Length: 179
Image 1 (cartoon, rainbow, N blue to C red):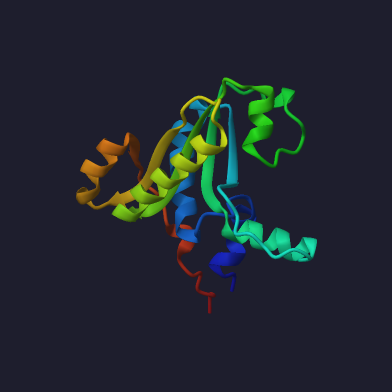
Image 2 (cartoon, rainbow, N blue to C red):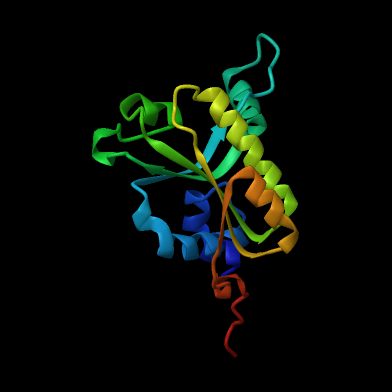
Protein backbone atom coordinates (compact mmCIF):
# COMPACT_ATOMS: atom_id res chain seq x y z
CA UNK A 1 0.00 0.00 0.00
CA UNK A 2 1.43 3.38 -1.04
CA UNK A 3 1.58 5.94 1.75
CA UNK A 4 0.70 9.61 1.32
CA UNK A 5 4.40 10.47 1.51
CA UNK A 6 5.20 7.98 -1.27
CA UNK A 7 2.41 9.24 -3.52
CA UNK A 8 3.48 12.87 -3.08
CA UNK A 9 7.24 12.26 -3.01
CA UNK A 10 8.07 14.21 -6.17
CA UNK A 11 5.96 17.18 -5.12
CA UNK A 12 7.41 17.09 -1.58
CA UNK A 13 10.88 17.44 -3.11
CA UNK A 14 9.79 20.41 -5.22
CA UNK A 15 7.75 22.14 -2.49
CA UNK A 16 10.09 21.41 0.43
CA UNK A 17 8.79 24.21 2.66
CA UNK A 18 5.18 23.02 2.37
CA UNK A 19 3.50 20.42 4.52
CA UNK A 20 1.77 17.53 2.74
CA UNK A 21 -1.69 19.07 3.31
CA UNK A 22 -0.53 22.39 1.82
CA UNK A 23 0.45 20.93 -1.56
CA UNK A 24 -3.19 20.44 -2.73
CA UNK A 25 -3.90 24.04 -1.72
CA UNK A 26 -0.91 25.24 -3.77
CA UNK A 27 -1.91 23.10 -6.77
CA UNK A 28 -5.45 24.55 -6.66
CA UNK A 29 -4.05 28.08 -6.49
CA UNK A 30 -1.61 27.42 -9.36
CA UNK A 31 -4.48 26.19 -11.54
CA UNK A 32 -6.11 29.61 -11.10
CA UNK A 33 -3.12 31.97 -10.95
CA UNK A 34 0.00 30.45 -12.55
CA UNK A 35 -0.46 32.41 -15.77
CA UNK A 36 -0.18 35.70 -13.84
CA UNK A 37 3.46 35.01 -13.03
CA UNK A 38 6.69 34.36 -14.94
CA UNK A 39 8.49 32.17 -12.44
CA UNK A 40 8.07 30.37 -9.11
CA UNK A 41 10.81 29.60 -6.60
CA UNK A 42 10.23 27.33 -3.63
CA UNK A 43 11.73 26.93 -0.17
CA UNK A 44 13.32 30.39 -0.42
CA UNK A 45 15.66 31.18 2.47
CA UNK A 46 16.05 34.74 3.72
CA UNK A 47 17.05 36.49 6.92
CA UNK A 48 20.03 36.20 9.19
CA UNK A 49 21.28 32.76 10.14
CA UNK A 50 22.43 32.01 13.68
CA UNK A 51 26.18 32.64 13.97
CA UNK A 52 28.39 29.60 14.41
CA UNK A 53 31.69 29.50 16.33
CA UNK A 54 34.94 29.91 14.40
CA UNK A 55 36.40 26.61 13.27
CA UNK A 56 33.00 25.01 12.64
CA UNK A 57 33.12 22.70 9.62
CA UNK A 58 31.57 23.96 6.38
CA UNK A 59 28.94 21.20 6.47
CA UNK A 60 27.83 22.09 9.99
CA UNK A 61 27.95 25.82 9.22
CA UNK A 62 25.73 25.30 6.16
CA UNK A 63 23.31 23.12 8.12
CA UNK A 64 22.99 25.73 10.88
CA UNK A 65 22.50 28.50 8.31
CA UNK A 66 19.75 26.63 6.47
CA UNK A 67 17.94 25.55 9.62
CA UNK A 68 17.94 29.00 11.24
CA UNK A 69 17.07 31.21 8.28
CA UNK A 70 13.46 32.05 7.45
CA UNK A 71 11.92 29.70 4.89
CA UNK A 72 9.30 31.01 2.47
CA UNK A 73 6.91 28.48 0.91
CA UNK A 74 7.01 30.09 -2.54
CA UNK A 75 7.99 33.30 -4.28
CA UNK A 76 6.05 34.16 -7.42
CA UNK A 77 7.84 36.50 -9.82
CA UNK A 78 6.65 38.97 -12.43
CA UNK A 79 8.94 40.76 -14.87
CA UNK A 80 11.35 37.84 -15.28
CA UNK A 81 12.39 36.02 -18.44
CA UNK A 82 13.57 32.58 -17.36
CA UNK A 83 15.69 32.02 -20.47
CA UNK A 84 17.91 34.96 -19.46
CA UNK A 85 18.61 33.54 -16.00
CA UNK A 86 21.32 31.03 -15.06
CA UNK A 87 20.17 27.40 -15.17
CA UNK A 88 20.33 27.11 -11.37
CA UNK A 89 19.10 29.93 -9.14
CA UNK A 90 19.82 29.67 -5.43
CA UNK A 91 18.86 33.14 -4.18
CA UNK A 92 16.53 35.98 -5.07
CA UNK A 93 19.63 38.18 -5.39
CA UNK A 94 20.53 36.24 -8.54
CA UNK A 95 17.18 37.15 -10.08
CA UNK A 96 17.45 40.81 -9.08
CA UNK A 97 20.97 40.92 -10.58
CA UNK A 98 19.48 40.19 -14.02
CA UNK A 99 16.04 41.77 -13.52
CA UNK A 100 16.37 44.61 -10.97
CA UNK A 101 12.75 45.69 -11.54
CA UNK A 102 11.26 42.22 -11.01
CA UNK A 103 8.30 42.08 -8.65
CA UNK A 104 8.31 39.34 -6.02
CA UNK A 105 5.20 37.99 -4.32
CA UNK A 106 5.87 36.18 -1.06
CA UNK A 107 3.42 33.27 -0.75
CA UNK A 108 2.46 31.48 2.45
CA UNK A 109 0.35 28.37 1.83
CA UNK A 110 -1.89 26.86 4.50
CA UNK A 111 -4.80 24.47 4.62
CA UNK A 112 -6.36 26.62 7.34
CA UNK A 113 -5.34 30.30 7.61
CA UNK A 114 -4.81 31.64 11.12
CA UNK A 115 -3.39 34.75 12.84
CA UNK A 116 0.06 33.12 12.99
CA UNK A 117 0.26 33.21 9.19
CA UNK A 118 -0.13 36.99 9.17
CA UNK A 119 2.86 37.21 11.49
CA UNK A 120 4.87 34.90 9.25
CA UNK A 121 4.20 37.01 6.18
CA UNK A 122 4.96 40.29 7.96
CA UNK A 123 8.31 38.90 9.17
CA UNK A 124 9.16 37.54 5.70
CA UNK A 125 8.23 40.91 4.18
CA UNK A 126 10.47 42.84 6.61
CA UNK A 127 13.40 40.47 6.05
CA UNK A 128 12.95 40.69 2.28
CA UNK A 129 12.97 44.49 2.35
CA UNK A 130 16.05 44.50 4.58
CA UNK A 131 17.90 42.12 2.24
CA UNK A 132 16.79 43.68 -1.05
CA UNK A 133 16.75 47.40 -0.28
CA UNK A 134 16.87 48.47 -3.94
CA UNK A 135 14.15 46.05 -5.10
CA UNK A 136 10.49 46.80 -5.64
CA UNK A 137 8.32 46.33 -2.58
CA UNK A 138 7.19 42.69 -2.59
CA UNK A 139 3.56 41.66 -2.36
CA UNK A 140 2.32 39.19 0.24
CA UNK A 141 -0.22 36.43 -0.39
CA UNK A 142 -1.83 34.06 2.06
CA UNK A 143 -3.20 31.10 0.11
CA UNK A 144 -5.68 28.92 2.00
CA UNK A 145 -8.43 26.36 1.65
CA UNK A 146 -10.18 27.68 4.78
CA UNK A 147 -9.55 30.48 7.26
CA UNK A 148 -10.86 31.95 10.46
CA UNK A 149 -12.66 35.24 9.80
CA UNK A 150 -10.72 36.69 12.73
CA UNK A 151 -7.74 37.17 10.42
CA UNK A 152 -9.52 39.53 8.02
CA UNK A 153 -8.70 42.81 9.85
CA UNK A 154 -5.04 41.78 10.16
CA UNK A 155 -4.85 40.71 6.52
CA UNK A 156 -6.29 44.07 5.44
CA UNK A 157 -4.07 46.19 7.69
CA UNK A 158 -0.91 44.32 6.65
CA UNK A 159 -1.71 44.60 2.93
CA UNK A 160 -1.84 40.84 2.47
CA UNK A 161 -3.75 39.38 -0.46
CA UNK A 162 -5.94 36.53 0.83
CA UNK A 163 -6.68 33.83 -1.72
CA UNK A 164 -9.18 31.15 -0.73
CA UNK A 165 -9.17 28.15 -3.04
CA UNK A 166 -11.10 24.89 -3.16
CA UNK A 167 -8.41 22.26 -2.73
CA UNK A 168 -8.83 18.56 -3.39
CA UNK A 169 -7.43 16.53 -0.51
CA UNK A 170 -8.21 13.08 -2.01
CA UNK A 171 -4.49 12.36 -2.43
CA UNK A 172 -4.08 12.61 1.34
CA UNK A 173 -6.40 9.71 2.07
CA UNK A 174 -4.78 6.34 2.65
CA UNK A 175 -5.31 3.88 -0.16
CA UNK A 176 -6.76 0.67 1.14
CA UNK A 177 -5.51 -2.50 -0.49
CA UNK A 178 -8.13 -4.45 -2.38
CA UNK A 179 -9.00 -7.88 -0.96
